[in-house]
Image 1 (cartoon, one colour):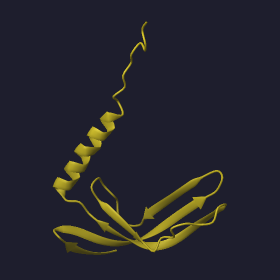
Image 2 (image 1 turned 120 degrees about the vertical axis):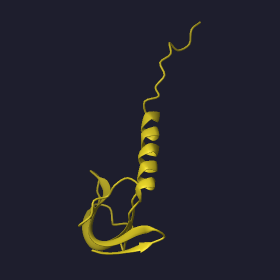
Image 3 (image 1 turned 30 degrees about the vertical axis):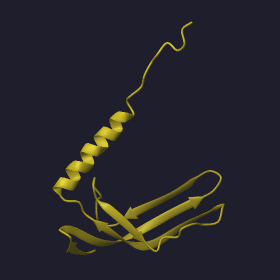
Image 4 (image 1 turned 180 degrees about the vertical axis):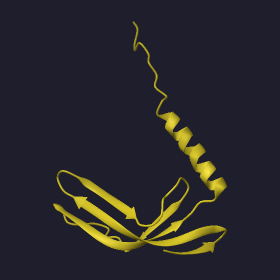
Length: 100
């Protein structure tokens, strides 16, 4: 894990494992970053990840990722934004429907 500062934010290079599956049962891609815990507001850039795989296959690729760690203000703003986006899911209206 290597790190440096850019524009007042800490930037860290870490190894990662990319798991991609494209089958009839599942379509997903997961990235496991090694040696760092991601928190709200952090940005992750995965390098040299495959953009697609043939249908019916799954693959695991080892690569590197760049993580830009958020500062205290960015973390707070990300938490607040996440809270308000979550509360939008709670907005459910019940109405009796059409009444003649």
